[in-house]
Length: 511
Ligand SMILES: Cc1cc2nc3c(=O)[nH]c(=O)nc-3n(C[C@H](O)[C@H](O)[C@H](O)COP(=O)(O)OP(=O)(O)OC[C@H]3O[C@@H](n4cnc5c(N)ncnc54)[C@H](O)[C@@H]3O)c2cc1C
Image 1 (cartoon, rainbow, N blue to C red):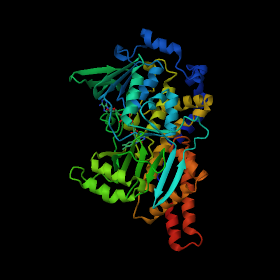
Image 2 (cartoon, rainbow, N blue to C red):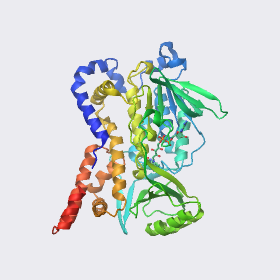
Image 3 (spheres, rainbow, N blue to C red):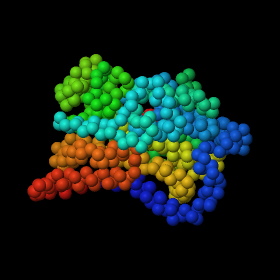
Image 4 (cartoon, rainbow, N blue to C red):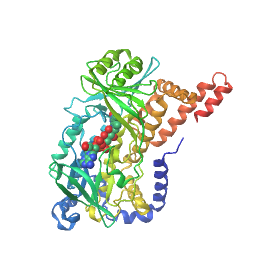
């Protein structure tokens, strides 16, 4: 198994940071009043200074602290979070009408917790969002029900599923209520560079007018089809599969308020509610070449290959959704982060890093990153004076941030899970997609069966994995332990009661 780059990077950075902590701590923390860190709020005097003191005026006198490109899930939430802290935020979004997409419809409970931290939890209200309390897995007629470990949380905490566009509109509205947020419709065409740093963006409005927006920090959140990614990051993209989306109407899921994962052939099928009367179905189709929707090949594929593998309760609604013809498709991209050194610009959300959406973790990762960024920026009253605001931070920046972070974690230990959310959820998403897809390789088939049987054991065997997927406990150690537990379980299945040479050979390959 390839070692996740995030983990290695985080390990070495933390090691260096720890060794240098004591020497750097005074310098890094000297400007930061510890009480302010513990208070968690942006220092009042910073807010005042940002708005009224000419000394902290941003670059080119634009009056903006942060330019955000894109007001999707990430841009809208980030705008709200930074503006709440007193930053003057200019958000430029290509299309401010309600999006109609088949992405980002299930928010994991870990993501809901982040929404609460950001003060945005009311954005899942009044949109007919549905509570999600766990998963149901289906394989060869067998079922396993896996509940989120929510016992320790407030009764309101659970996953939420909804129409993505409704959720985004609620977040845009919420951000726009703040007087220091300027939300504008426009398409960003390029980043503005000068003296080796990013100074802002160039954008076009509907009337075809070119404009420029300047700020000491530009954050690009233009999603998985990002045009600007190539300026800030090595633009490697892989497309292992596509999702084909349908909406099933007026049908009951076998397990109410659960996400349903069918371990089908050749790859998984998902069902989850997106309103009180609609169920989203996402069918994974491996590869990039899909059967044609226009000439009916897709409908035929869905009826003959997919429908027979669905739970009986959903077959009729599935067929009528296919017959209705509203078949949507979306590539499932894998876009690992590999940022270039670009001071004063950051990539966030899918544009920064995206993994297979099977586990529905994208928004949880993104919201968690927003909380990290907001908190790291908190001590900086004036973003102009922050030298390490860079997409790739460089050694000095790494040391300064890691040691600053360690200072920070000393005061807020409970928050040290932040850094692990993205690496754990992303690693898990890629691994589960591989394991949950069928394969002619016997070792992979064994692994798939072992994973299903392991989760079916219930109790602690399912709680750990579900806590990882849900973002409720995204510690990397849990991921490593899970990997070994499933492999040992799989090997045990092969070797008991009597080991055969074939069983031993396949067992060895499970590692
Ligand atoms: C098929 C599929 C299903 C998914 N399901 C889930 C799920 O159930 N749960 C989950 O957590 N995650 C899911 N994800 C991932 C999730 O959708 C993303 O992580 C999330 O939407 C990322 O938000 P974002 O703000 O980065 O991008 P987006 O939400 O795509 O927002 C990007 C915004 O930038 C705007 N924009 C683009 N270019 C420009 C430009 N040049 N100028 C101005 N504006 C611009 C766009 O109009 C858009 O509004 C899924 C992904 C896919 C592909």
